Structure formats: C-alpha cells, structure tokens
Image (cartoon, rainbow, N blue to C red; front, side, top):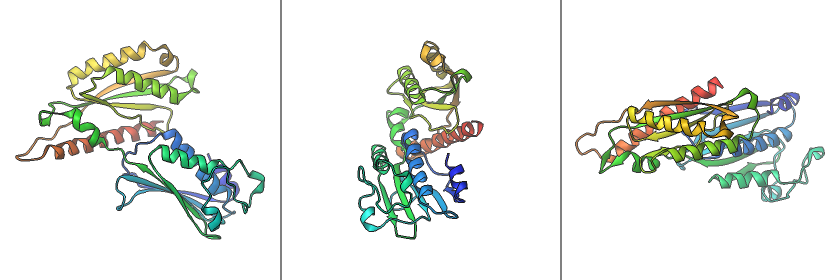
Length: 291
C-alpha cells in the first residue's frame, strides 16, 4: 500500500521477518491498521534516499511476546515531543511536513489498539538519527488450550483430528464486511462442537482473499465426518453466508505420541501442541501462497 509513495521519495522499504515465528493472538485487521499507521509516518518523515525497515522477532528476555519494530532514517524526535508522542491530539510542532498535519490521533489510536491486543508500544529516537517504533504482541499458547480437551483421566485421548473450514469469497461478493462474516462463521463453528472435547481456534489472519478456520477435535476420522456434515449443514442454512462465500471442509488426522514409562502428561500435550501448530502454519502458508 505504501510502495508507490516510498518510490516517489526514493525510500527503500525493507522487511526482516523470521519465517519460523510462532502464532500470535491478535486481531489481524487491527494490527494491519497499526503497521499501516507506523509505516505511513515513517515514510512521511523520512527524507528522500532514506530507508524504512520492518522487523519481527522473538527476544530471550521476554519469551511470551513477539516484538515488531518500524525503523526509519528520518529527522528523529526531540525529547520533549517523544514524551508526548502517544498523547491524544498531540502534534509535533517541529514536523517538517506541515501540509499533511492531521488531528493528532494516529499514534494515540495505535497505542490503544496495541493495548487492546495485549501488547505495549514505545519509541526510541534521536534528532537527525531517525526513530524506532516498537510494539509487542502476545504469543498464542495452544498448549494451554489443548490440555483440558485432549486429555482424559490422566492420559491423552485416543484420537485427535484437525477439521479445517476454508471460506472462499464468491466473485459477486468480492467486497463485503469480512470481519462481521468472520465472526458469524466462528459463532456457527462454536455451536457445532462439543465444548469439553473440541476447540475452535481463533481465525487465522490470512493475507489473501480466503480465510481458514481450524477445529481441534478429540475424535477419530470416522466420527469427525459427522462433525464435518454438521458444520456443512449449518453453513448451508445460513443465507447470509451463502450469499457471499463458498466453503471447503477437510479432516486431517493428528499423530499422537506414545507415552514412555514415567513420562509426564504435560510433555505429551506439549508435543501434540507443537505438531498441531506446525500443521496449522503449513495450512496458513499454503492458503496465503494460493491467495
């Protein structure tokens, strides 16, 4: 979205993201809003022939969060303004682009969105040496969610499957209120599962036109087919969704580890969580590349 503006100013946009990063628990639409605002400011206040870098990484001293930063080679922020930069209605009086001054709400809204998603945001800057805006997002802990669902009487359940529901927008409904549609899909899926045995994972934040929902179900493939048909029936009965989406439902078995002598149950749950996370990430990457 910002490439054209950056090219006009001969600003290089770079991204450094480890493809092995784990899942985070956040609203994808709101995080895109945060990144767009930070990148727009970075390009806006970086002179020609500069650069803007987006990074995402894990840090050893804070293992429960993902760290995201936007670094620019712009004019920097003086100490007085830096202390107020996230305040509502604040505008830097030394801004070099007076023609594009807004209401002073952008960074305040960014801060509120990051807080609502369980993270924090801060800025590091020196005059004439650019700025680094950084924020954190909580990692998604599948292990904590899985423990109650895939264990019974001190052992793993006999079978676990992944049920994936892919939503594909119909061509005639390429534009729509997709956050509302996503929420409606989640409501239907949650009404189709057994609360004590199945888990509907948060929606994957796909960047393509399709959207994928994943259910971890403590059942075998044969019984999972009953769940698949129940979900399909409920989706077919929802006129709102039928008018804008087509759905593809698949069932994938999860290989459960054998328990060794004296091996703690928590270790097995962690292994299953890691395997399911890898399966989900594979689905996520494949659907994004197709999109």
